[in-house]
Amino acid sequence: MSQTDITTPASLVATRGGVSVSIRRITMRIFVTGASGWIGSAVVPELLGHGHEVVGLARSDASAAALEQAGAEVVRGSVDDLDVLGATASASDGVIHLAFKHDIAFSGDFAGAATSDGAAIETLGSALEGTGKPLFIASGVLGLVPPGQVGTEADGHDVDPSAVGPAARALNAELALSFARRGVRSGTVRLAPTVHGDGDEGFMASIVGVARETGVSAYVGDGSNRWPAVHRSDAARLYRLAVEQAPAGSTLHGVAEEGVSFRDIAEAIGRQLDVPVRSIEPADAAAHFGWLGGFIGLDSVASSAATRDLLGWQPTGPTLLEDLDAGHYTRSSRADWAPAT
Image 1 (cartoon, helix red, strand yellow):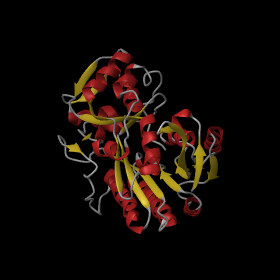
Image 2: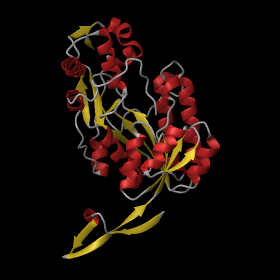
Image 3: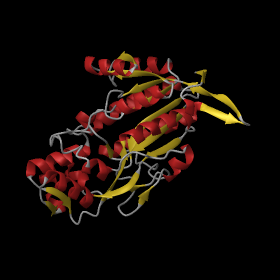
Image 4: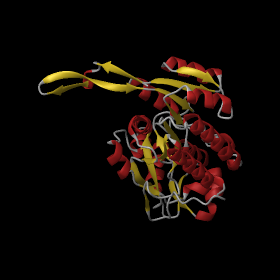
């Protein structure tokens, strides 16, 4: 890492005792996997805009071109290219690991996706072992605690080692945290299930796609179940703060809204598409929502109070309902979407 005197922009000039002085800031070379994905493509400019260098992992020519256009250096490879991951991490000042095989995970092979993710985390952590450099990965808050409770950063660390399905990804988060005992400033950023914004093709876009296809904007039961939410720009800023400041062993919550009710979500979608809003029975959720049926009725509320206190992170982006009411999701959406990095 190198220290650089930065005198612009003006916000980086402090006044001390009536005298203006330039602030010395650490400039880091950050390796980002999943750098061209929905979250990664916001993290990269956030890092670059604060003086850091970025090396992005790219699987395709299109991803490489997008990263180069953004101002990042490109290393070609996939999350399965462990030699590439290890060598690039070793040559970097820190790592943000966002890549995950969502395509195979949501087509039935979550175990395979989790195994690949675990191998990548082991490789990245081992490359940084004993250096004190940061490694922050992506995980989630969905289903962190039983319905009706508010999940905090302290929850969810007692993971069954035989966990399968989505819960298996929590084991990988604990693996990342374990590198704090091996000389890595490692941690996990648990993201809200909807990281929303204009251009999102994630969970919300898929739910809108179902409403368009069926002609009904549905919620399960009375619709009182809630999901946390965070705007993409706020999530990107949290990752930047994490690699800059967060201590080893940090569990951070990328949550701006603790819980948005699904009835409110369905009503916003109904307004935008001009379709009726209706309740469906839990037993009919899979038939109506397809692969989303197993998630749509979950009540999962999460707090980010400890994260905000630790890093001074204050979300400023639009709320989920504001993004829905702005029409970002109803201009175009697909019912057959599955998450991708």
